[in-house]
Length: 111
Length: 112
Image 1 (cartoon, rainbow over the protein chains, first blue to last red):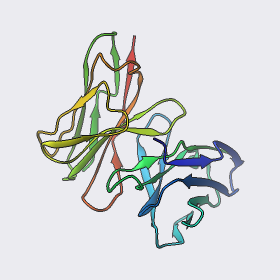
Image 2: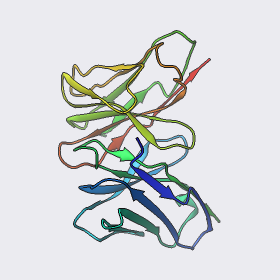
Image 3: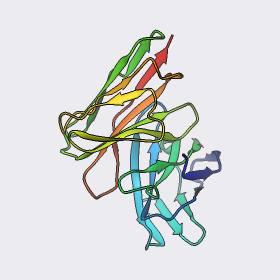
Image 4: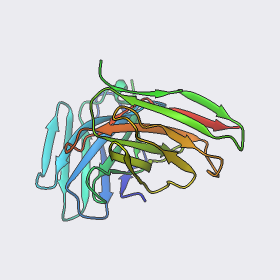
């Protein structure tokens, strides 16, 4: 079952622009995570935000969480071509240590 | 360097054959997972194991089997009962309690 749904499915921007992608989920969660996947590779963890947090920063990444709306957003500021990848949200709503992933947003950053 | 090693990276199989995908980690993590990813899709959980000699079915366990005889190893067998096995398979692990998953580089299985 897919707990999270990312929006948009695909996003194309120019270098230097900001990229925002959203994630909606269905059930209560303890935490929400964002992962990045380069084409044909494994996923890499970016950031984890707990249910009692509203915003978190890590370098050029900013994540927000609105538990009342069951949604999260990932903002990448000053995008670079190297940010081109798919981005997935993952939630633990179905059980401890059992993450459920969304369908992902494909980000293309053009030089 | 610590990490998760999946092998083989590419695997071709004829219909009716069982294949086993290897996943080894030297991170001393308790929990290990197998996910399947189809083109343009998210990850779906096949099996997971929170401790040696114990594992649980995920959302799409039919046609798959696993074992967890050692903490470091969590091999996945794709059996002939799996109707549509062509996919990208990802192994992951996590230390108890943190929630963050560490992934291998994946194994791409193609059924000919």
